[in-house]
Structure formats: C-alpha cells, structure tokens
Image (cartoon, rainbow, N blue to C red):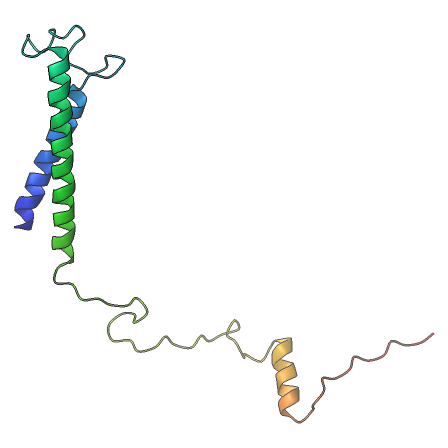
Length: 133
C-alpha cells in the first residue's frame, strides 16, 4: 500500500511541476506564449487558461499535502517509542571514564583540598608567608 501511495505521490509531484511551469509569469517566462494563442493553439482564452491552471495547481497542491501526510502516518505506524537516553540494546549504563581527564583522578587542586578535609583538617592550609626583608 505504501509503494502505491509513493507512486501516486510522485505522479502528483511531476504534474504539479508541469502545471506551475505552464503558468504565465509577469515576465512571460515559461508560459504558453504571449498573446494567448501561440502555444495553446486557440484552445482557451488567456483568462480562462489562467483560471484553469490556477485551479489545477490548487488541486494538485492539496493532493500533494494529503499524500505527504498519509505517507508520514504510514511510516510511523508499528514503531515503538524509545528514548535516546536508553542507549543501544544490551547496554545498561555508560562506563566510567578513565585516564587523566577522569574526575577524581587525584591530580587537581580541588581533589587535594578534599583529601585534606577528609584527613581531619577543618580549614584549608594557609599559604606560606612571604619572606620579610
């Protein structure tokens, strides 16, 4: 069913691009010709042709949005919600970092202060006094 809807969606897209390119811009661009009868062979007047192309564009745009929404709904059916925090299947928690950049590795000033406080010193050590001259 999804493949059929994708094919219909692509046909609508191609038709929509074609209808938009057939419309006459203010500069005359890729329109059906200036003067109303050059490329159309006298099929319609300029005003009737513009109204038909505008209506066709609106209809094709509506069908484009409908098929887009239907494809989005079909793509999300049958999926279970998962959190990205859970991680890959089979892992429970991230491993603790190791190495010199790991916290509490014993090399930082804050770690030394914590160790001194844990050893019984209630106040941080005072810096040595500067020698007097």
